[in-house]
Amino acid sequence: MCPPDTGFQEEISLGRAVRFDVEREGLSLMIARLTELDLGTSSSDFEKYEQNLFGEIRSRITLDDVKDDPVFRSYRDLYWTFGMDPTKLRVSSEALLRRIVRGLNFWRISTLVDVANLASAYHKLPIGLIDETALVGTLVVRTAHKGEVFERIGGKQLICRGREIVLADDEKIICFGYATHDSEKTKVTSKSKSILLLIYGAPVVTPDMMTSAVNLTLEMVDRWVACTVKGWTTYRSN
Image (cartoon, rainbow, N blue to C red):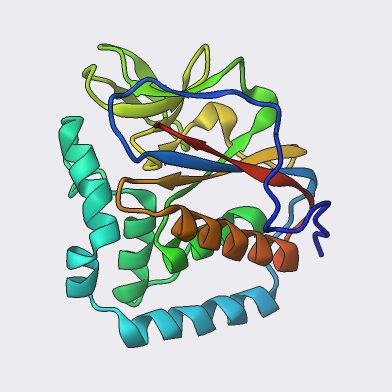
């Protein structure tokens, strides 16, 4: 189990600055810190739990529902304003939910990544995971620089056109898009001991929806991941 130092409802300072350098209202980030992480492979009990949630999702959601969902539409609209085609670069939560509705399963990666993927698909809000020790300076939501190179998990490099929305630190892009691709340089590994879990909010996503999402996610983490939850905090663009 993963006993939290604070109740999930309590918001605390994580001592890390986050800045929004894009002129878009209604963007938000909820960040939780997880420490003393001991990653392993997901258990058969988790896989049964996951399949039960998959069944629940498939019983009430169709691909047409996903296409017309106002939450996903808000992320798509955001992407279009940054010159990004959301049918080719889907926000991660929509891509995961579409996979479930099509009858496909998720990849087995690690306890934390598996939980994050499941939580993201269930509450529809994208989640990113960052190895905190790989960060340099301030986190900033900004526009990519023309010609800037981003290396996604798996090693594939993307050359930015200078319009895309990204999350970066003082040296590099951490996430391409608004939680579409996480970086190879900050990915969670078996050596990671301090992780930032980020939930990305779009204009249509209310503070109550964000709070519900972070609580659901941390409840899943508490149940299935060996770590300590240090609390969470919220950053908003306005």
